Amino acid sequence: MALIERMIETIERSNEDEYSRKIGRVCRVVGLMIESNGPSAFVGERCLIHLPFGEPVEAEVVGFNEDRVLLMPYGETMQIAPGCLVKGTGRMLQVPVGEELIGQVLDGLGRPLSGETLSTGFRYDVQRKPPNPMNRPRILDALSTGVRMIDGLLTVGKGQRVGLFAGSGVGKSTLLGMIAKRSSADINVIALIGERGREVKEFIEKELGPEGMARSVVIVATSDQPPLVRLKGAYTATAIAEYFRDQGKEVVLMMDSVTRFAMAQREIGLATGEPPTSKGYTPSVFALLPQLLERSGTSANGSITAFYTVLVDGDDMNEPIADAVRGILDGHFVMDRSLANRGQFPAIHVLKSISRVMNQIATEPHREFAQTFRSWLATYLDAEDLINIGAYKKGTNPSIDTAIEMYPRLLTFLKQSIEEDADFEQTLKQLAEIARGE
Ligand SMILES: Nc1ncnc2c1ncn2[C@@H]1O[C@H](COP(=O)(O)OP(=O)(O)OP(=O)(O)O)[C@@H](O)[C@H]1O
Ligand SMILES: [Mg+2]
Image (cartoon, rainbow, N blue to C red; front, side, top):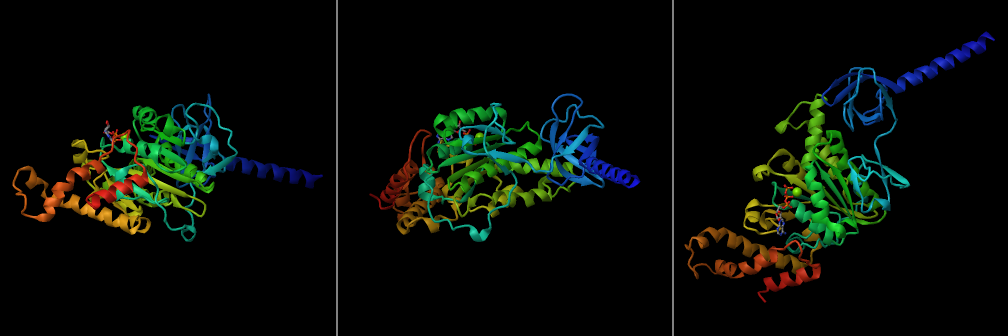
């Protein structure tokens, strides 16, 4: 009898231990950082903080401070009090995935903003590993973006990852909207990270329109959201793009902007006590960037062609995030304010931009025509100041003469209004005609 009682006692005690390990209590809140005694959780684990009233707050373990758990909320820290119960869920954040997502606008954690619940069968972890590099097919086919200057002069391959470097107001959103509507991809996954709230509706209604929305999933984490949600927005979008790639689809992933993703991680890093390095960015920012950007691209099943916008203040391309991102991606398109000021849209500066896979996907004649086009443009722009002040005399230099003669046609090719369609074959034909001087 005594033996049985002892056994029961032992079991009860072990259950109690088990129970107490899974439960913690809030002991401190500083800014967005919540500290708790317990639970025994792992970094990245989703936890629930139970409040005296109402729904529990979702939070995630972001670190440890000696024996205390550091958590950051997906929501507000309002109403969190000392002693609130913290429960580990034993899981990382997951996002529902499925065809039902098409046409939806989701928050940073993958929940529809409309408030409805989606009945998707699958869930993906938002933070996943990139495909094994040995199983990634080479990029061999061009993606038709529907933007003439890109298809003709900066051809993008299916599965290529391009950085779009630009200051504010030079036409990034408009360009992304044009690609979303016109590209040959099966589906767009668009992440708006750290944008102003006002811009979201404008992008969805104006830039994307019903036509673009019908083949897009939009993920929104505005600037007023906690940094963790902005960070997760980027991961959620990437996980959704990965799901569609796993289904064999050709996906276009657009992230506006990866700079705001880096800023969100900087906020988290500084709050957890990381040392600031360049421009206040913490080391974890530079560790996470490649982990995020390597997930797009080709896989054995399909492809994710990605456009990541990078904010460059005062066109400073050597800013730390711009520098890091440029090194990871397979191309960078530089959007130039001086072109936008002249009304030359899309304001991509062809001569400052490069598509690192164009040589392996474009035909030999296509490459030659593009080269001819570039050299005329370069010659004209070099001599432009002289030409404008009337210091250049016709006949002095035959190549400048040709460039001046061709310039209006180059400009017509480069400019494309928001409504204008540009079919890939047609673009190549036009480029050939210009280069042959027909
Ligand atoms: N292809 C185009 N044709 C005509 N106008 C254009 C074109 N692209 C952009 N614009 C003009 O440029 C302006 C700024 O564009 P947009 O909002 O896309 O810039 P942005 O870089 O996304 O700005 P922000 O940094 O504020 O997000 C728009 O008002 C639009 O009228
Ligand atoms: Mg914009």
